[in-house]
Image (tube, rainbow, N blue to C red):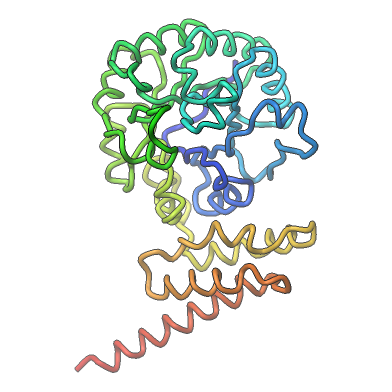
Length: 337
C-alpha cells in the first residue's frame, strides 16, 4: 500500500455540497488540505449512466467517499477509483439518512463491523491506495465506548488503519439527518480516548469544529481534523491552513485573487455546458465577515440563476463588491477628524 496521505486537515464529504466545482474552488484556497467527494454509491458507479468519478486533476489530494456494503461491489468500485487516480477511497459508515439505511450502508453499518471488515479486505486486495473509514462514535442504543472500540478493533484487524470519527452518535430512528448534525452531543473526549487506546491507528476527529484555534487544540490529541459545514459557509477559513499546518511558505491568496483564479475554470465549464451558478453557489461565503460580504452574496443569489448569465456573474459581482468597499473606505476617511 502507498504511504498514507498527509491528512492533518481535511474537508468533510457533504452531499450536494462538495461536488467537483466546490473542490476546485477550495483548492484555490489551500493546496494541501485533503478534499473528499460527496458520497457516491456503488450502484451509481456500476449501473449509473453518468460519470460519477469525474474530477479535475487540480483537486489532488482528493479522496472518493463510497457508499455500499457488498464486498464485491466495493472492491470493483475501489479499483475504478484507483484507475481514475483518486488518492484514497473512504467507506461511509456515518450517514444516518433513511435512504442510506435502506441501501444498507452509512451509519447503520456500525452495527455490522464484520461486514465493514469484509469490505476492507476485498477492497485492499484490489488497490494499493489507502482504504479508510468514516464513522460516528455510536448509533441508537449502541453508544457505549465499548461499542465503538469493538467496531474499531474488528475493522482495524481487517487491515484498515485510518479512521475519521464524527464525535457524535447517530440516531437512526427519530432524528432527521439535519438533526443528527446538531442534536446528539459532541463527545470529543471519546475520540481522544480512542487514539490513546489505538495509538498505532491514524485517527482524525470531525464534528462542530469552527476555527483553526480549535483545530490546533484537537491536534494535541489526534492525528487529523476534518472540518465540514464551517468550511462551506466560510471557505476562507482554509487560507492559513497551508502555512500553519503544512509549513508551506507560499503567500496566502487574497479573496479577490481567489475569485480571479476561478475565472478561467468557470469559462471552461461554461463551454462544456455548465451554468455559472453551479460553481458560484459554492463561493457565496467567500467574503463572509468582510465589508461588502452581503452585497457579494446578494448579487450572486439574485443573478446566478438567470439563464442568460455568463462569466460576468462573477466579474460583475466582484466589481460591485469592490465598489461598495471603496465607498465604505471613503466614507470612513471623511468621518475622521
